[in-house]
Length: 295
Image 1 (cartoon, rainbow, N blue to C red):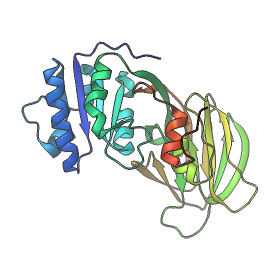
Image 2 (image 1 turned 30 degrees about the vertical axis):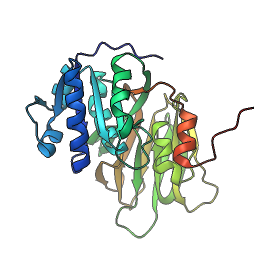
Image 3 (image 1 turned 120 degrees about the vertical axis):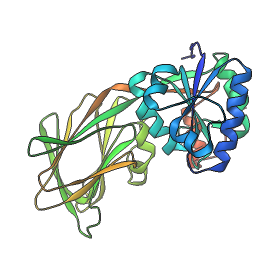
Image 4 (image 1 turned 135 degrees about the vertical axis):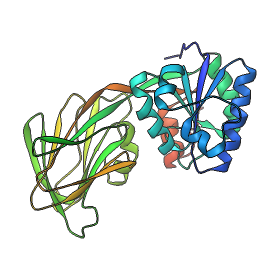
């Protein structure tokens, strides 16, 4: 739906180790300032490129003060910002200076016109749900985090298969013997899960994909469950494993550890430019085919 967001303060977040991002970020900051918009730099970004006289805030400060966040970088930078700002309801716009850019819609060369569209309300708003993840050991919580893309449990540094017992809403599904398992949101269905032959889930699909990684049993196939499902993964002794969250955080799992996954109450809010099409994005990023011909 069209975005109707009164914008007086914009947070700017950039990929830390990229000089090109610094140049683009300062250009954007100057443009916003000329339009009467207050600019806040994320503290890690400012540490990398300098604050240049702009106020600096951590993510909590950005969440409290910013009306919108503009992220310059790739999908990884966007994922991190989306998780950190979801609880505050701050919408995000992505400027792609990464590779594929499934979540960063604006090309660098169209950044300033795209931001002008945003300020004029010519953007589409979309909500992407997150997952709450809890790792338990002996009934005690060892790790708790949110994920926008996926949770991956794999064999880590071991050179052998692991075994994971999977249940959905308390009902036993199977014991999987494999390299690992991915639990993915629709947003994450075009990430690691896609390379493991998982289904692509349209963002409007209220589902969670459970995707085996190189299963030993060839009949183990991906399955999509409702987004209100509560998924539990139990590491079967004597196996150890490593658990990754959006590819950006991780923890080591011991035999008997359990991973509980459920839809979060928070959502990431993405703002897309006019004319945005999910299917067109897939065609472009995945090189499916040429633009369809119309009579």
